[in-house]
Length: 155
Ligand code: NI
Image 1 (cartoon, rainbow, N blue to C red):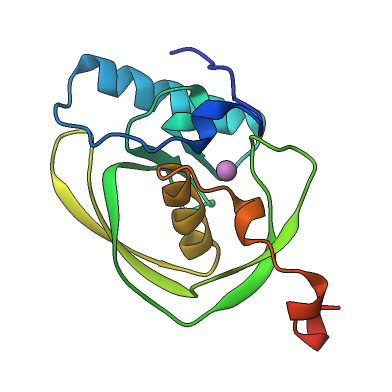
Image 2: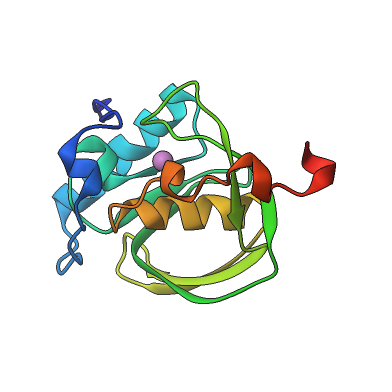
């Protein structure tokens, strides 16, 4: 395992669309291992492959409930909404309010190639949406709410 360099906002790679993973092999496992190690070392709750310069549809997430490794994740459904401060390991220090669904159902494949469905709520739903956005070149600053759109109780 090795720590990988995390790209910062401004890097072109972060704006590109990642490719579907067609074959899961030793290098896929190595990348997942490195991504998890890099995420934990940086103190984050999620990391997407493009953040370490690899344009493949892979994310790792741990919101304190154990490590999730998702290959080719897709949102099946979402419901509710939540507004909370959000940050990104590619943009340390800045947190902005972003509206996300309160619940999401996501399908993906694990490192063994087995299909799985994740039901995320609250922070996990937020992390899933944030990391999956990275796979399409979307950053949380694109979705940050201007102060005029914040609910009164959040001000
Ligand atoms: Ni991020």
